[in-house]
Image 1 (spheres, rainbow, N blue to C red):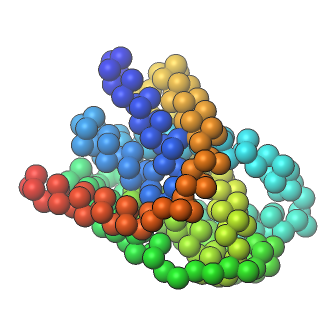
Image 2 (image 1 turned 120 degrees about the vertical axis):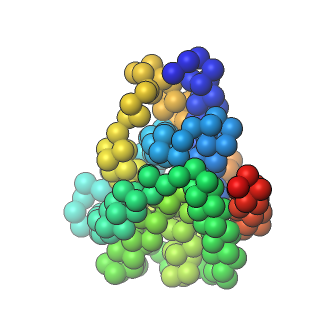
Length: 252
């Protein structure tokens, strides 16, 4: 991989560090950039996009380090939520991951466009919360994980899906945001292990993109979470999805 390509991936890492905290599918945005601008094939772009999540995963661990200490307490509410969520994320995500990584570039653009529109529609659903995440039942935590697994599809926003589900279950917004990010950690770790480090990544490049994503992600998380509460990302997702489909059809 030459210096220009390596620098371009650093820019994509910055996009991941910013977009991860917004309900707009950071994976979908990263893949669109890599397929249409960097001219990577979809399989490469998908592998890179999964690996880029490692940096933002570490940012979540650093940001919520006090909460993660509860995961080692078997009777803690957080442990009882994260374990079933993680198991059922794997049940839905692994089969989808094996299928979607072999999608052709043209179909990938169409897929991302359709799923971005679906995310935008989901974000428009009315939501109002009053429950705490500690009140979630095993079935609700399992369902949360199952729906999170669909975010392996580029264009489906992981945070958009999980936060929307929690809010539809009447969980308070602040609690929904925190739990959504916490359950992402084992999911991202698992996806990274299954996908592995991209074959053409040198040790230096892998370190550079992870460090970039971590620093940008950690530095932007509070700002962007406040921003996300004030902006209609539903319209953004729908518009971006329509554009992705339109450009793909024009290119046929």
